[in-house]
Length: 165
Length: 457
Ligand code: FES
Ligand SMILES: [Fe+2]
Image (cartoon, chains in turn orange, brown):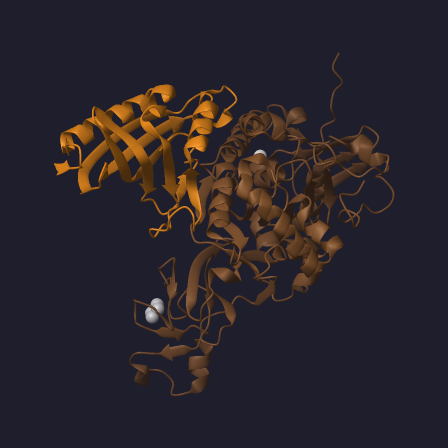
């Protein structure tokens, strides 16, 4: 449990938030997922050689500002997003949730993820760690920064990031 | 009744490229993407005997910096020695062949093998030989055990190339007119250009030549990248395919020059770059003109370019810049590495804009490249349909778009398939694949790039 200025946040609340997010993504309910991102929020996936650089100084796989997040959702909902038409089947497992640090109105959390993705008779595994900054609202949590850090040495054959990691 | 397409013999002496200037047909036999035998021949004839792009010297800026990297299937050390010289070594201990350096990057004076603790300086000399009393007491012995250098290494504008064959011609001879386009890109930054950390490493389930074709293929842009084009439109920018051309640079190298494709950070403004960048574009353009003169500045700045340097380098000089390296792993698998390439000393806000903009397009997590990857992989799966003796008449991929235009002597457009045809001709020549040519190819030499002063006709 940590305390931001306005209220307390428990690990159970963060876990619930991450599990519900995973469900929305696995079910491709992207409009609902978008409401979990605070306007002005960011979506990031650093590269596999990442050593803590931020997305203003180093190459990334994904470095979306809020406009690009919206464009990404719009694209993924289109039948013309060929890489995700048909959609991949994804199955997300989230564990090892830690509340790292409380800010004035945010909490910085980490969690491990294991995502299985299936498409075109191929099976792909994505292993990594979330390092999110969550905005603490009176009645819930939202992403200020949603960062998925892959731990693989490179993206395996066919393991693209056409979906939301 | 459908006309029967003649079947041509295949195999060592058969044609894999079928070019017919009467029928205006150019096609490639699909075994070229599929056959492990073809792949082995490529490794032998191309990767073992051609200049290959290894990396950029800004990846190893300081003495002792190193990266390890597999090239043409061979593990290498790419490093800068104590005197600042760029070097490439086979990453295998000369004692019994252990991978010498097992880190992907770092800085070191010595590479020490863990197995029996031989150590080599970063210029390759055998520096430590534990228990050397049991070896010949002779400097010639130590010299014979020096780390093996890749036979050839040359640098053009910071782009480091190596060759495993000591007898390849000079790098500049190999690059031909492609060297000029690399130089144009190198001139963008007032204080030079540099690669950034944050390298995109990914792998695709497709033949490496599909990645080459895709980069030289303006025809796919509108349908494949429909959602990206839609996104640009919403930001207030209309993409056009007009007035864009493809050039055969010889030696298998190709160039697309794209004028209405996108803005160019610091050079051609588009709305998604924002107002601050609009002002900077004006200033930056003045800087380019003062430094390079108006003509060269226009050539550097006005049009986007996609340059392919045979066989493994793609230089995307678009809204921002990316260096992409192709590493074939098997007939149906290619490793891809991509670096952001940026101006040295540019303001932080521009650097951030550049990374955001480029990454929103390219790479496995972009809004566009995943659809290209989908294309390579869907082709690789699709071409199994006609394989072997099941449907030999249709086991060909067609690349004839724009031949009529080319026959009339017009400059090929980016949305034609001429750049692919020139790649494949060179490929066939190097691997010794049979080519069947019927009819009269267009007379005259194609332009090796746009005429000075803008995109040519
Ligand atoms: S194999 Fe390297 S020291 Fe023996
Ligand atoms: Fe593309």
